[in-house]
Length: 322
Image 1 (cartoon, rainbow, N blue to C red):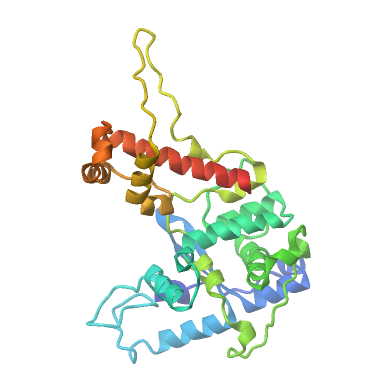
Image 2 (tube, rainbow, N blue to C red):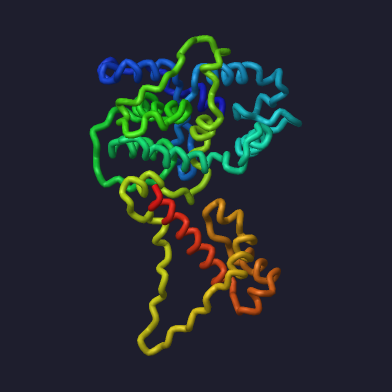
């Protein structure tokens, strides 16, 4: 995030007509949350919500930039302070470091992508309406095909007053709101002005969800899959059978052995985590390093399609499960 983006955020007061349409709880959210928009991949808007203590910390960081040894030419808020650098710190590296040092049993699960998917999954415990799911998906950076038009409140108001309810509910324990509609969710939030209050501490999970919602284009639209029970469009990238001319016999397919499966799962474990298929170079490297794949005549395309189909199978299972 750049300093100019933060300073030039929309700070206009909400129109009285819009304010009157909100509940008292939602009005309190609008008073105590600051919304900043940054640009993600393909020009997509990425909204970030700041609680009071986080906003105060960012303001202090901007004021003390020079004292921290940051170059005045560096445009970023979270800038590198060394050797006159004009680059920013990598949020994913910081998240990984603190995830490992906090004592979590599975720190590898604390990533912005997995946290977004977690929010999408647990939101199905709530009785959210269609347009509420749409707003949540947009905020989380997921891709939902919406073929309907709604008369909506301004996007800024919806994200602060509506979507933030879900994030606070997730932070305080969402299970107690199971089956409730969005209007019925009123988490117990302390809006005291004292920024040192423990009640205002930003939960790491919520913050990384809000700040990292454009990490990858391979995210499933878990919300749509859970809501409709239909297979995601990503699952339809390849058909299971190829079309063969009538005068040409199809080449018999050789089934994958259990040993081959384990070899490929080991070679491409990172690709399975990121839910994306490998390229030709990585496939050929795996074949050259594992004699069993060579002996069975596996080429790089066969390996790639195996990984691709396996990922699609995982995605389908996730959609059916939730």
